[in-house]
Length: 132
Image (cartoon, rainbow, N blue to C red; front, side):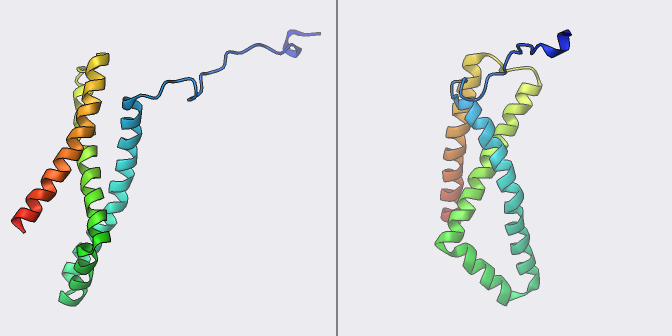
């Protein structure tokens, strides 16, 4: 019998169930999801621009959609996704500079990213309604 016939014991890689859920992990996943959401949300921006170029009748139809409660909900989510993704990009830019890798710093920045995206989104919408 050769050595190749004997099954070898191989170490198994730890699965997701082994790891403790962390805020930084969730922020990484949400950063990817917001990137995808921004990609598909760009179709809404293009739709609005095409409507603006098509004439007042079609533009009024599209503006009516974005002015409805459902359209505003989509725009609110799009605003939050853009802000959250931007803050995540700034965090990665700082990391690319070799800074902010301390464990307490990473956790603090993840909390700031989440809280900052919520606060900035609400602030933008308050300003937008104030200007309107």
